[in-house]
Image (cartoon, rainbow, N blue to C red):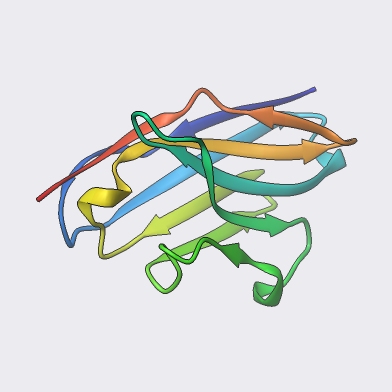
Length: 118
């Protein structure tokens, strides 16, 4: 079992920045990849960014809509994943979910709301 807890969401003006954190606990050594997803009202959940365990920046994956503005990273000593979000737009408004895949099972956090005002 892997338990994920997100933090760092909030309200920000367009052009601003936020950093989301996702703390993993439990059987973390089995985590193969981690990522951030988001779901806006009335829309499907979509991948924002992902990063495999031990992967370099070359293996980071970003949605086209956030590439160049968002950066995903992991601190293995703290079992924590981050999403640095810069140049935020109103279209980035959504609930952001942390995801981890371990032993072919997908785990999800409870989500954190990000609201970008125009």
